[in-house]
Amino acid sequence: MAPYAARAKAHPDGLVDLSIGSPVDATPDLIREALAEATDAHAYPQTIGTPALREAIVEWFARRRGVTGITVDNVLPTIGSKELVAFLPFMLGLGDGDAVVHPRAAYPTYAIGAALAGAEAVASDDPAEWPENTRLVWLNSPGNPNGRVLGVQDLRVAVERARELGAFVASDECYAELGWEAPWDAERIPSVLDPRVIGDDDTGVLAVYSLSKQSNLAGYRAAFVAGDRTMIGRLTTVRKHAGLMLPAPLQAAMVVALGDEAHVDAQRELYRARRAELKPALEAAGFRIDDSVAGLYLWATEGRDAWESIGRLADLGILAGPGVFYGDEYPQHVRLSLTASDERIAAAASRLRVLGDSL
Image (cartoon, rainbow, N blue to C red):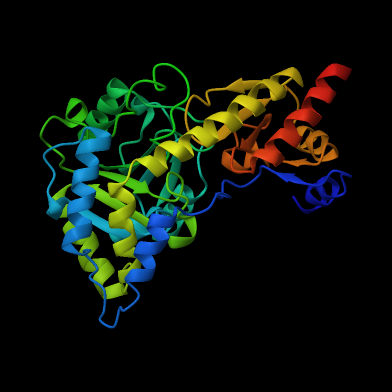
């Protein structure tokens, strides 16, 4: 990417970096204040999480995700979601001869986690294709990079197939508050722990969530996992001995973040407006947007090699991510993030519209 970044930075109106999904908006004041007030943290933090945090996670799942029936024994805070994704196969005891299934268009850490445990990574969206040695299935809804959403029936089929294979299921759901197109602009994006998916049996099933996107807490590393009590117990034991504990001030800040919906609603509207600006401009410039009905990204193609598209965008001062970073089956797609300021998104849209006028 280095030469393309150099080309994009040379644009007379400056770089618009849409290649990484890192929040640019301020962390809400109420969360920052909660963090500041909790800085007298002289004792070791609890790996399992404070009672207040565990209760806040349970309440949030019921209120925002429609997940009922879980208790404080079903939840565990994590140091961001990436470390959990990377180490989950290892922490569950997977190794040589085991397969870890992940989506075809996928965040690379799913495959990295399999490699760290000595397992095989398998890219597949079709449960019927999952191999007999599958021991962990990663779902990602809404998806990164493609914004694909799995409905209740999709999730149910995935869980049923995983159970047939004797595999665990982990669903990465950190973009679930960001639904844009019907029906997800009006309906709640379902969790794998939704009773419509698993009934009252969460055996072998986990949901992973991060506050990085909805609350601009990427720098806080604030996330959590919920589901099967036995699995949570195993993860807690491993993490306790490995020292993987979330700092106490961050746990206090998470309680406040999970209890406030106003800042989440405000952030969602910022992303909605940026998407409404960028998407039609990309289409006017000759790109087709695939999936992208939810989440922080536009998954786009102009029907040519992704690196050629990356170069054409770089000449406009726009830096995007090539589809090959997210799977070998996407040589013609690029991923553009909505995590840039209003001014930079407007600049990108203006440049794209000029390109479209010249076509």
